[in-house]
Length: 125
Image (cartoon, rainbow, N blue to C red; front, side):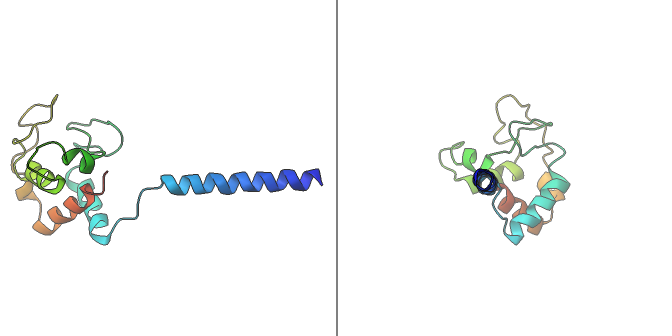
C-alpha cells in the first residue's frame, strides 16, 4: 500500500513539474512573428541578443516590447522600435555608442521582412 502511495506521489510531482514548465514556455508565435524571428536571426542576432541582458554588440532586446513603451513619452512600443530601426541614431541606449548600428539597416531589409521583425520584437515582453 505504501509503495502505491509513493508511486502516486511521484507521478503527481512529475505532472506538477510539467505544468510549471508549460507555464514558463514562450508563447506560440503568429506566422508573421515566427517569420520575424527567422528574419531577426538573419539580420539582427549577430549584434542583438534576446535572452536576459546578453550583450553581443548592441543592447539586449529581451523585454524590448515592454521597455519600448516607456522610452520616449510620445511613442508607443511599436513606433519606438520602428523608429529605432529606421533611424538608429535617434535613440541611442545609454552605454552604447551612437553609430554602432548601421544607419542603412532598414534599406537592407525587405519591407515585409521588416514588418515580420516588428511583429516578433513586439512579442518580447
